[in-house]
Length: 116
Image (cartoon, rainbow, N blue to C red; front, side, top):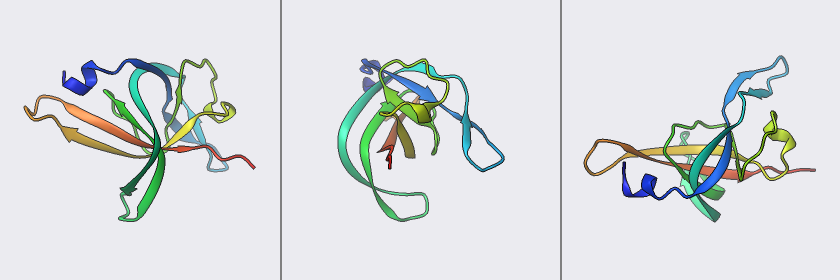
């Protein structure tokens, strides 16, 4: 366990994408409560496609997450994260080995859902 993962003191709800429905929209697995460190504020990163993008926040976690999954700071029992008005979409995830190489640090770049 790294310094970072030992200090994940906030709770969040995580929804992983399960499949895409007939119209191409994601469906999600049941929500899971996880420990995180959530940093609000903009962060610039390079996407997998090599394009520069801006995130609305950063999330440090001890589990694997993937682009398109969704998170909410706090505990939610909603089955569909798109109904949670303050849920965030994961834009990109960086996974870096710790200095001793025994575990990994994971940082997710988040985008606030836009309504309208």
